[in-house]
Length: 155
Image 1 (cartoon, rainbow, N blue to C red):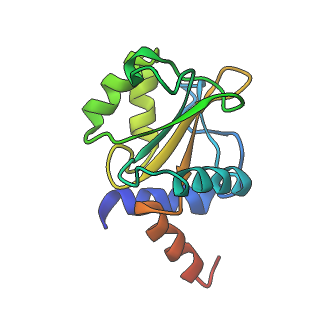
Image 2 (cartoon, rainbow, N blue to C red):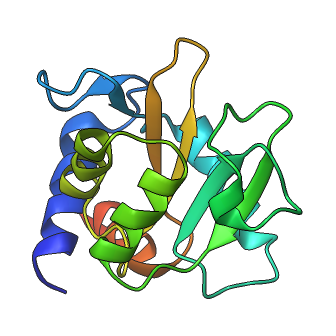
């Protein structure tokens, strides 16, 4: 399972249920949303997708344009795009093409355990302009972490 598993497990244990987690004071534009209701919504969105290979859900301005020709937006009224990225470098390039500054895109990679790999994450903007990341726990690495949390009698 490795390092991503332990990092995601630790993140969820320490911040589970919190809605607006600032993970890096030097990058205040990135927040994690680990609120149960939000995670449930992203789980449902992922589970309804036809593309079960996707490891990234993006709230974008368009569902018909190529992904590189759209931008990230807030969830309400957005097109939820299911994307498969095979490496952190590919994710970095995608996020920059969607309008993120390089430092913010790098912060996403650094603070979202398993992103662009075994874990599935959702990215979107919230109404105050912060980029928000939420893990999907119904599949992939997230499902394994959730099972571990459920099996832990100390939780």
